[in-house]
Each structure stands twice: as structure tokens, then as C-alpha cells.
Image 1 (tube, rainbow, N blue to C red):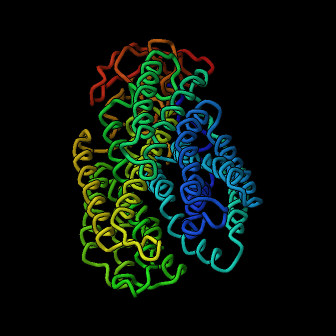
Image 2: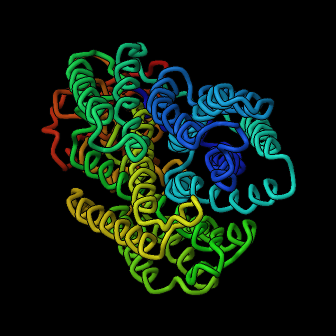
Image 3: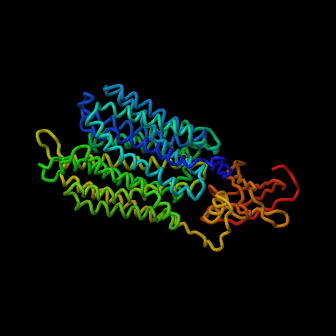
Length: 581
């Protein structure tokens, strides 16, 4: 729990920062979507059984799930830009390993390394929070969050085109080239964040979380192959529960945990993370169902008989709509808050899947479904980081968004396993080939609709963010002041007030530091032109607010916050003697 300072050179960062960070997210999505067009051909391409070939996809999922919260925490400790570049570099190495082999084990090793790129999403969101003025932050985080869908939607037809006309290894060379380009752009454009969390990296916590996640996700992804009631599946589920419980006890007792479970248990964070799982489920269902429906031959009576490339183009509006939704989300969220936009997104997703049940008879209908679902998923995805960022201190942004990204990954894993099982169990077997049925597709859409309903219920439980009446808002003289004044209006759990001199005159650009009971810095800011300051508190407890400014002596006030959803008004009065700031 450390720096949340707004006195950062990064606030003047160039306008290219947001598109460069969003491009990193798109590169991650391309890496994930890379093999979708050749999934059915993987056993033949790698000379192995279908059950073994699925490890090429499963390994990326598992390593991404493990790397996401770990890279987020390392970013908080040692620099988010540094860890973003490291994540992308590991992905490039993995892509080159995969490009140079057709051996199953080597391919799995390469795909495991590629999974580390998943850390780029929470790291990018953390960098945006650290360097962007408040008025630009909402739309930027929305774009970063939805970049996974954007990249996936755009990569599908491109990957299909490459796979159809070139050696499939070219897919990996393309991903490596994109990764190198993203690293170069990040080095040129994105400044390092000055914010750091204090403490050391929790190695045991990282190992425990990694073991627990692997034990949990492995049976989820492989349960349909092993049998859901088999001893292996049930044993791994049981082991995952035991490991994660022990890990939780350890994290609660650790001074600098990998994941602050007390923060995670706050209703705003907990219900956002649970809703994220449901959004992940709903996003992946359409990605699994529509391409198959479009490519099935018309001879089945319900297949739409499109080529691999055309099917990719018809599903591409899913990602494109998510990209165009980001600025719409920013306006809606600024007016109504991210909770309402999450609820609205869930409702649109529900409408999309409901309509999809009756719109499966023509290719153009698939494009319509993709547009509606893209709009809903875009709104929902864009809301998630804003809800997380608003509920945790800035020094925990990377780790908290890493955990949230992990929740989405768990949702997509569950979706992949369940929908795969449904389509397999409802398939018709013709000449030894399993052909998915329309019944299977409709059941899959019904499952997605049920997931959305659960997500909607969870979103309704999110704490209400009652904003105080804006009244006569002071006029901001700069972007910096606008950010501080916006903070003062919106902070519900924290301290706010004005910094004044001995005669009661407002002091501009005074540095106000929040110190917790352990003597650690929990936040810092600069006062606006009218002396206004605002600081959120990470938890209930006793704090010291220390203020200093050029031409004034320092001042410290002790104060206690109950940890509830309210702001404590506290003016800080600086002595008049002249001392260096």
C-alpha cells in the first residue's frame, strides 16, 4: 500500500500511450486466437492423438492463468513497464520455439511461454491509472480491457487466411513479429510508472497460487476427456481446494502477500470478480459456436457452408464492436457509473444470446448476433477494471487487475470445457467423425444465457456508489486540478478537504501524504488551485495526513477512518514559516 501520487511526469505522457498499450493487449489476443482455425487439424499436424493435441491449447491457458496475478504483483513492486516488456519478450521466445517445431512436447513448451503474455492486460491498465489524467482514464481502461475481444475478432479471419494459404508455422512467426513491434513501441512511447508497492515478492504465495490454479484448471479443461466422475478429475478438484485453502491462510498471515485477500473480500472487488467469471463464460461461447455453425456443410440441413476465411470475417464484428463500445462506455460510466454499465452490458449480452436462439439459419444473422454480443461484452469488459480500480489503492492496481483478468480466464476455461462437453455429447457420428448438431448449439446458447443471468444478479449486489451532489463545483485551472477536484467529488471512502495557510488562504500544489499505522505511505496527492485535496484509504484504521508546500512549514494531522463508504472532511493548516518544500 504505497504511492498513489498524482505528481508524476507520466501525467504528461504522449497521446500515443493508450493506443500502444491497447496494441499490446491486441497482440495477446492474437496469440490466444492463433490456433483456432487449425484446432481440428492439430492431431494430424503434430502426429499425435486428439487428447494429446489439446495440451497445445491447455498449456497456454494454464501458464496465462498463473502468470497474470504474478506479473501484476511484480509490476507493482518493480515497475509495470518493465514487466510488460518482459511478458511480451517471453511470448516472442515462445512463438519462435513453436514456429521451429512440429514436435508435440516442444510445441507445448513454446505455447506455455506464450501464455505469459496474459500479464500485459493488468499491467497496461495499471500503467494507464498511473499516468493518465482522470478524465481520460475511463475510456483508456475500457479500450485496454476490450482489446482481448478486439484482437480475437480481428485475428480470427487473418489467422484463417494464413492457415488456408501458407504453412501453419507462419502463424507463430506473425505473432512473434507483432510481439517485437509491441515491445519496440512500448520502449519508444510508454514511460515507466514511478509508483511502487513496498515489500518483497511473495515467492511461496506465487508457488501456492500456481499449484492451486493448475490443479483447478486442469480438470476443468480435461474433464470431458477424462470423465467428470473419474478418480483423476475428482482427485485434482479436491487437491485444488486443499491447496487454495492453505494458500489463503498463508496469504492472510503474510506481511506482503501476493494477493491482499482482505482487499479481495470487499464487496466491490468480490462481486466484480465473480461477475467477471460469468462475462468470461459468455464471451467464449459465441467464439466456439458461431465459427463451427458457419463452416458446417449445408448438407447437414443446418450448417451454413462458409469457408474458414468467410466464417472468420462474419465473426469479426464481435471484436470490432467491442472496440467501438469503449468511448460509449466512457460517456455512460461518467454519467451513471461503471456498475450501471456492467448491468447494461449483461442485459445486452442476454438479448444477443436470446435472439441468437432463433437467428441461426443464414450467414448474415451470425454477423448480427456478433454485433449485439460485441456491444454487450464490450460494455461489460470495459466496466470491470473501472470497478476494480475504484475499490483498491493505486499500489495494488496491477495485482488486483491481474486477479480480475484471471477470473475472466477461469470463465473462458469453464466455458471451453462445458461447451466442448455439450457439443461432443450431442454430436452425430458420421463415418467416425463427430458432427455438432443444432441442438448442441442451442443448448450452448442457453448455457451462456444462464451465465449472463447469474452475472447480472452478482452485478446487482455491487455496492451502490452514491455520488455527493456536485453543487457549485470550483473551476479547475488545469488538467491536474480537474483530476484532483474529480477525486474530491467521487471519493467515498477516504479523506478530503483543503490545504490552508495560517490565515485561512488556500495553498495550491501542496503535497499531501497519507501514512498508515505502520508508518507506510498509503497515498499522496497535490492540492488543486483552490487548495482542494482528496485521498482514498485502503482500509479502516488510524492514519496521519502530512502536508508541506514551498514557503510553509510542514503539518501533520492524525485521523481515523471507519472504513465505510464515506469521505471524512479534514482541512489541513500549514504554519507560516518559510522552509524548503
